[in-house]
Image (cartoon, rainbow, N blue to C red; front, side, top):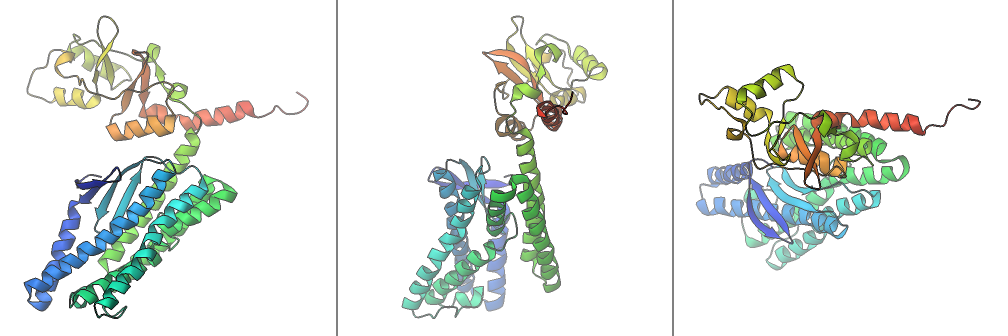
Length: 376
C-alpha cells in the first residue's frame, strides 16, 4: 500500500505502518496534553494508542496465520488510522476457509479481553471502569482494563455483517455454500454498503470523523471486492494463451530502430507498447507508452530505441492462470502490456485489452457447450 513503511517482520509476514497512523498518534497526544497540561499524561495516552494498535495487529495476525495454514500466502499487514489490513495474495476458494479466516481475528480479541481485564483487576481497577483515553491513563490498572474494553469492542464491531468486515465475510462464506461466490458476494456487498451508509450518517450527525472514514472504507471496499470476485469467476479456467495476442499479431522493434520509426508505428498502428528483440529474435527490452511519451516531450534528442527502452520488466508464461497470475502481474507492474515468453522465446503479448475479452470468451465457450436444439 502506498505511503506505508516496514517496521518489522514476524511469522514470514511484513508489518507496515501507513504514515497517517503517526498523525493519529500525535493528534491524540496533543488532545491529551491540551486537556490535562501534563506531558506525562500525554505520553500515557500515546502508549494507550500504541497498545490499542498492538491488539489490532494481533487481530490481523489471527487472520493471517489461519490463512497461511490453509495455504494462502500473505503479502503484508498494514496498520492504518482506521484499523489494520492483512493483504492476501489470493482469495479463499472454499467458503468454509473464508469463514475460518474471518472468525480468527475476532477470536484473538475474545481471548485477549479477559487477559487484560484480569491484569487490570490485579492492579486495582475494575472492568469497564475506564471510559476514555484520558481516564484510562490514570493508572496502570485503568490502562489494562481499557485495553480489555477495546478488545470487546473490536470483537463485536468486526462481527457486524458489513462486508468486507469480518462479519460480512462470514455472511458471504455462509451464503456461498448455497448460491455460489458471485451471488453471495453481491448480496454481502449490498448489505455492507447499506451498513456503510448508516455508519456514515451516524458519524456525520454525531461528529464522529473516524466512523465516517470507516464507512467510506466499507462502501468502496465492498464494491471493489465484489468486482474482483466477478472477474475471478469470469476468468476461471482460462490461461494467458486463451486471450493473448500472438507473436504474429504483435509488432516488435529492435534496439536500433529510430525513435521516429517508433512514433510512426504509434501514430499509424494500434500498439502503444512494443517488445524489443535483437537480430536473433531474443527479447532484450520493453518499450512502453510511458517511455515513448516521456521521450517525445524530453529536451534530449533520443535517436534509437536502445536509449529509452527498459531492460527490467516482467514476463509471463502462456500457460499461466489468467486471473491469479496474468491480472495480478498487470496490476502490480502498472504496465498495460506484458511479454509472453515460452522456452525463452517471445510468443505474444498480454494486454489490458486482452483481459477485457475474458468475459466474451467465457460466453462463447458456454454457447459451444450448450446442446443443440432437439431435432436439428
